[in-house]
Length: 456
Ligand SMILES: *Cc1c(COP(=O)(O)O)cnc(C)c1O
Image: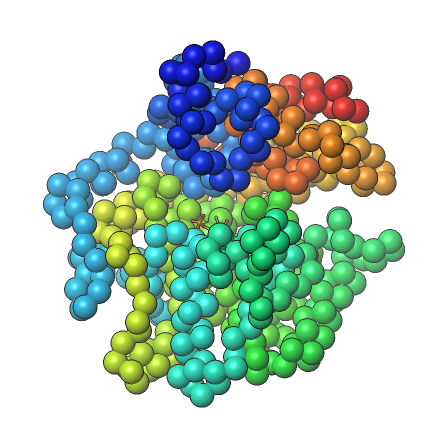
């Protein structure tokens, strides 16, 4: 238990002066904040010296672990050389130039253009502003609606929260008008009795067609989707999903945008989630693993068609009036260049592929437990869905706070893993060893066994 006995404790100080986001406050009052000082490989260490294996790579992003010497050195070298600059008024750092070239090179696009932000949320906001700007410039000012899916996560700014398909945004009076949430592509939960996976995919395709017909194709600016939903609980779409959706969008001239903030840079076993799921988007949103979490940075990567049209639209009024002070920050770009090199050329992506069978086997083993309803995932992202009744897929009563219990029991066992709804999400760093992966599943099994004994 953390030390909350004196007002001088780290836990008390954290709670006194920090306002928490996405944090269960009763748990904080009861257990205190885990205040961390540093990390070692995939482990983080708290002020009491306790080590936790972080099965969530921080927030999906610390894919190279917490003490990668090459990334720290790249940051230091760039801080020594040129510690900050913007990308306005026709100036940008050499690192920014090189990173844009690199991102296009590793993207699925033959050519394109990159715009930088400081986060994934800002990248989604930027994308929407780009499309609104573009459509007005092309004489279609009414083409503003954005289609996303229920349970999707696209961020927390006003626009990206409106794109996000989570019910909690109701407390802000969001979504804004014109943000339309289609069905969540989760066959296990949403498929009807007797409905095959292919039938479910066809139903989602029909829903998209109906929505376009109802709203009017001319009023829609884009369809934005995560290849595999992350914060929605690691939802892999049903077979043929993107192969059904993409042609419908194309037929109506609606851009398909892949929000690769989680999937991008190796998480699914390919560089991009759209490659794992075999579809070609018109633009990509990147962040999280792009800097391996060593710098806050996001990017909109436009494919050839949108890049050309955005260029023309901006030329017509002589600029694109948008940008953040730290967009294309030279230190962030230097770190991203190194992170991409580390992931693609120093074995991290290879390790994702090598570890995936062990990861899947560990998930499948825990899926045997009486209170695990579904094990799902792709590459090194997975989720175990806790259920009261396995056959009926009945969730636990909300009052039992099963997910909080699992998270807390895991913490006690020296494992950080995150509950999402009633699913336990695992997205380990790409540097994990076989032994660390085994440790992760052993500790999780210990935590689940304890919680299911309490609530089962
Ligand atoms: C995390 C996330 C975002 C938001 O990124 P932030 O950097 O937290 O603003 C957007 N899209 C997806 C898919 C994400 O997982």
